[in-house]
Structure formats: structure tokens, C-alpha cells
Length: 570
Ligand code: ATP
Ligand code: MG
Image: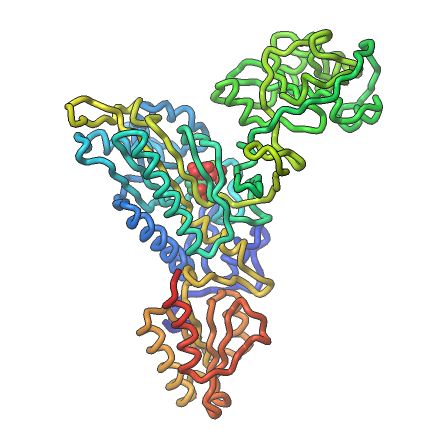
């Protein structure tokens, strides 16, 4: 491909609203443009990378027995009502009406659609197991679209759904997909972890997230040297036993305007871990008080699960006043009105604790469980944090780092086949609900994630298997006869070897070509000039190496070096 024939509108500067390195570089490299919040256009270079990633995913899923389908993007409301998700999915679901006023949504995910297909078409155990997968645009009205294509409102997802005769077969297949996802990550060149995760709005009993390690990642993951890894939201916290002390007399102390745990602890001269934070939530319309020690935070997901609530949010000022009888900031476990009290396992053993007095500008000191307050339930409702011990080996301290979730696999069981009655007949002619798995990987998010892990101050550094072109040839002057001949020969040999090659044939200064080459990040570069050719050599450079690592090689040796790398594959 000739550079002059391809639309690659590179930019010196990124637009001011590009909020992350990958978004800046994708725009500057002429891969994407923004149409509106969370909506992006992919230009030819962007499409090339997207297709390369899509093909890696396709190859791995087909090798894992998947069969590709394409489902409609617009889905009837009735299907979503069968599973209850028309309501549960909330504002993230894009809804629309046709001319007859029938309601639809733009698919954010396709469990309902595929389960409907399966219940119509799969009759017998002989047709199982089966795995359908597709590559389609997904639509989600994200609260905060950001980070370019990483959190967009329309994006390309590979989603797969498998149907099985029983749980054992699902379990077996889940590991096949798990391995396929790992290979996808390896082929993309990721430094990644597959971690235990929460199943969120998709549901089911068990799930893993594939996390690309990056400081800019929106997720926090916890890992242990014992091999355990989980989304930090999901990490079980071991109970904390606080040393018992002789109970002292309960005191009420005036603490004007002191609201934060640190301010109160400082004023009362107690350590933050001896403070009980009381946070008022509303779960499905009902107020709940959650207690956690001052040096910990509530994990809302754990609390929501414990309560079995569809929705949970912090109570507004009015509710806080109703429940505590005080301004926000002075809630405590003594004398709450109309709220169930859930205490974290770190709380009940605190002797002589401090807490809000449910009276504006007052706190209580020397609070002891049983004597002064009671909880309706004690459970693990706190966030895991630095210093916590691994819940699996129960020995080592957890390590926390940030990650970008690029894929998610779920063991769904009969979460969808049950309400939608996706059943098959077994060998005895009995109707059985089919257990399901589902697997989603964000093809467009992968592009951004690769760049988050692989770029430098000059631009993108594509990994070998996903680069839009594997090789860029830069002729110093393509119009020059000998140079053109040498370039064309190198080009033919590399393309005959199955590689995608870009020739920068533009009538530009070498400096401009090198700058653009660094920006668009093609992994291997061969520079051909009259001077070098006179000595029988070309310049060979890997994008990831520093400038000094440029080698002078005979054209055949440069070609061989590159072909060797790609022949090795991954
Ligand atoms: P997140 O927690 O980041 O919102 P999710 O849990 O909603 O992700 P899934 O429903 O599991 O995501 O979707 C599968 C994959 O689709 C994700 O792993 C991610 O790669 C991709 N994805 C999800 N939401 C977006 C989005 N708004 N923009 C781009 N890709 C996305
Ligand atoms: Mg989401």
C-alpha cells in the first residue's frame, strides 16, 4: 500500500477533550475521529487494526468450537421483558419506537436475543453443546462516556453464548473459552491478568475479567503471590479482631462542624480504626445504615448483594435527617429510626469506639457493642485495601494494581434459559433447561488498551500481531530510479511472505516521514536511500527500539529478520 493513496490524516496536536494517551494518539495517528460524545468514526488505519484484532478473536473462538452468527442490533422490548432486564438495565439502555409505537432497544449485549434463537431452534441433546458468537456494534448510554473508544456509547464487541446439556459440560467448556481468551490476550501482546469478578448486570454465578495492566485503568485488581487474583470489588475480606479493652463510660462530646472521620478522630484523640463510620443508604427505597471502621470504606456491591437489592444509593439529606434526627455527618449506630443496621466484620469487636451521636454537632465516645448498640446483621461489606491478607492463602498480603477490563467470561447457568424456557429434550425425551455461558470481549477497547500499554513520547508502538501494517518502508526519495527499484523489490518479497507493507511514497522531507512513522507506530521500518544503496545497505529499525539501535543491513538480511519474526508467530 502506498501512503499517498491511503487516508491517514495525522495531527501534530490532539484535541483538548482527548483525555487519555490512547485517545490522543488514536486521533493524532489518523485512526479515529469523534462525531459526538462516545461516538467515533474509524478511519482506514483504525479499521485495519480493528480487523486484525477481530480476526485474532475470530480465529481463537472458532478454534474453540464457536460458530459465527449476526444478530439484529435492534431488539424487541418483549424479549427484554421476559428476563426483567427491560427495567433492570435502566438508563444505560437506548430505547426507541417504530412507526406503530412498538418499543425496541439497541442491543447493549445479546443474551435475550441468542436465548430466543436457541429456544426456537434447539430441540434435542444431539444439537448440544453449541456456541454462537458474533462481532457487532453494541450500544450503551454510559453515564460518563470517556477515554476515547475505551468507554464509548457505541462500540464493537465480540460476544459468544454457549448452550450445554448440563452444568458439568458448561464447566468444561468454560475452561476452553478461558484458555482461548488468554491466547487472545497473548497474541495482542498484553501484560494481563485473568481475575475473579462480579457478574454485574449480566448475572450468573461465576465470572472472570481479563484485565490489561495499566495505571490509567478504571478497575482495581488485587493479586497474591499464591496465584489468586480478583477485581478488588470482589475480594472477600477476612474478619478483623480488635484487641478487647475494659469498657469505659459512654460519653457525649460536642464536635461542632466536624464531619470527616479524620477530623473527628483527631479531635476525640482516638485512632481512625476505633471510629465507627455510619453511612445511610437507600436500597430499593428502604433506608439502611452501614457501619464500617474509620480506616475502611464500604463496598456498595457487597452491601447490595447482601441485601439482595436491585438498586442502592447514598441517602439524600432529607432521608439522613429522618433516620438520624441530625444533619449529615453525625450518624451513629445508637438510636437510629427506621433503618436496618448492617455492620462490617471489622466493627463489632472495637472496644470503646467513637461514632456520631445522631445529634447535630455531637459524637459519642466509649461505645461498646451489645451494651450501647446492636446490629441487625454483621457481614463482610468493606472494600479490600492495602495491607489486607489474601483470602485464599490467608498468609500473604494482597498487591493492588490498576487494570483495563477488556474481556469478561460468565458461567450463567440457567439465568436466561429459565425465564425464557430454553429447553432441550434429553435421551429419555425429558425437557431440560440448558445451562449457558457467555463471553464478551471489547474489540474496540482492545485497541485503546494496547496503546495504553505500548506507546512513547513519539507515538504508538504497535505490537507485532495487531499493527495496521507490519512493515513501513521509507524511501528517502521514491522518485529516484535505484531507490524505487530497491523499495519495490523489498515490498514484493515481504508481501509475498504474507505481510502488510506500507511505502511512504510521499514527496515529503525524511524528517516528516519519520515523525509520521513514529506516530502511527508500525513495528518494523526499513529506510532506503541512495547513499546506503551505493554501499548495498538499508536502515533497519524496530519501532520499540531507540534511534541508536538502527542497523545497516543488506536488503535481503532486513527482509529475513522480519520474516523470521512473523514466521515464528505466537
Ligand atoms: P465496564 O465495567 O468497563 O463498564 P462491563 O462490565 O459493562 O464493562 P461487559 O458487559 O462485560 O462490560 O462487556 C464485555 C466487554 O465489552 C468489556 O470487557 C469491554 O471490553 C467492552 N465494553 C464494555 N463497555 C464498553 C464501552 N462503553 N466502550 C467500549 N467497550 C466496552
Ligand atoms: Mg459497563
